[in-house]
Image 1 (cartoon, rainbow, N blue to C red):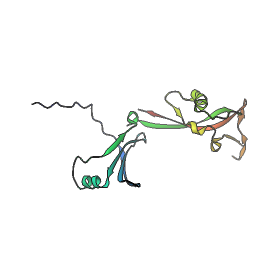
Image 2 (cartoon, one colour; image 1 turned 90 degrees about the vertical axis):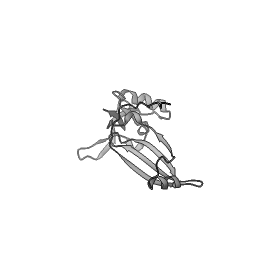
Image 3 (cartoon, one colour; image 1 turned 45 degrees about the vertical axis):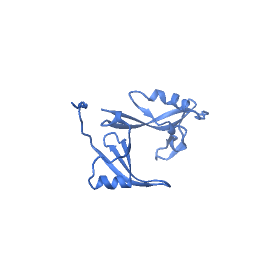
Image 4 (spheres, one colour; image 1 turned 135 degrees about the horizontal axis):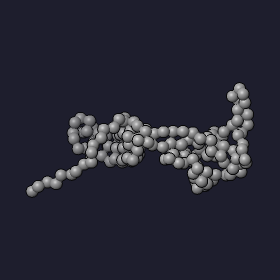
Length: 157
């Protein structure tokens, strides 16, 4: 009886890092292994092994069972770019809804840039004017808006 061969896409090697830790809870004691892609800075895999299974694997037994998750596959090998923009917000805007924040970020989210909506409304991110010595000199206000520093990121080839 002939065995079917699984066809794989082209293999590609990536740079990254591996981290192992031990996690404990009321009803579990496991080893947690993560893989992080160096280019994007994203975690791409997490595996969990009970201590007994980890002991088998580290002492040379192959094909040890584990639970694992894979994610962020679309950014593996891509370079993460980050920038910060001063985003105007109407002075009396409460920013309680995610959709309100999305509308304010939309003009800045072009060419793959994605804004961190939690920066809007965060008092640590308010943009201040500065005097000639670099000291804070009041909120930056223009046309009924105040401004927040918002971080944006994207992944490029």
